[in-house]
Length: 137
Image 1 (cartoon, helix red, strand yellow):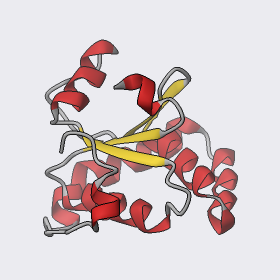
Image 2 (cartoon, one colour):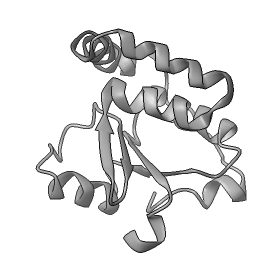
Image 3 (cartoon, one colour):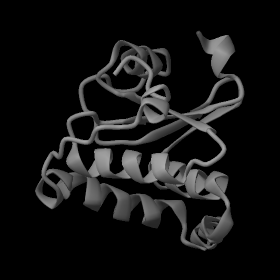
Image 4 (cartoon, rainbow, N blue to C red):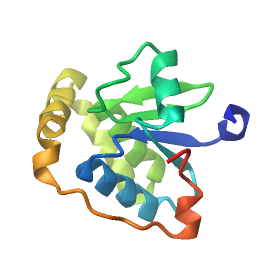
């Protein structure tokens, strides 16, 4: 499967989190060039990704962005890269790089810690085109 993903960016997210699902929906609506695919961290694909990198396979409080064969990013670095890839006005996210990673990751961790309180799980029904962007969900 990885050979089919070489030119895509895969967003790994907590499939049980309303905030995470909100952001997946936000990306889906803005991904006009079909650059992203999505997989929950709880899925077999997500668990394989985590275990191959020695990452925690039981706690799902981090978003990852993976470009197979190139890199993977986590937390605030992943968020900024996603915005940059989306382009347009979101390219201004490059200004977020002026904040040191340890500070932006602290902000990310604060939101992550409180994410279950911030948003209720909502049932989002993607379109058939959007559904095709999900890996083993």
